[in-house]
Length: 101
Image 1 (tube, rainbow, N blue to C red):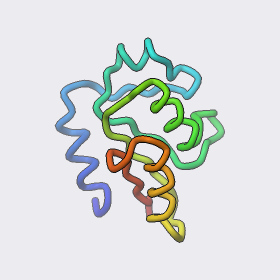
Image 2: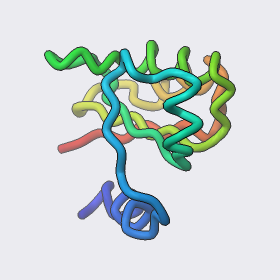
Image 3: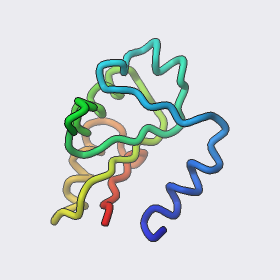
């Protein structure tokens, strides 16, 4: 559990199902339909073209998403600096960065 304890509790308490969206589908209509209170994305884009955290955060800010954002990344040096840079893009403290082990 460790660092993921709070995330697991948040997801378990979620009143709605978990919805997976590829980055290309992240638009105003889909965001309105899903109405997420938490968006989870990876720091780095993967082979499924899900979009990296910078692209996801930029899109969410453009769409005026005002809920929580959780960015998951591998263990890296300077996690606080990376988190601060992502927060400065617009979401502020509603964005959290956690490292998976």
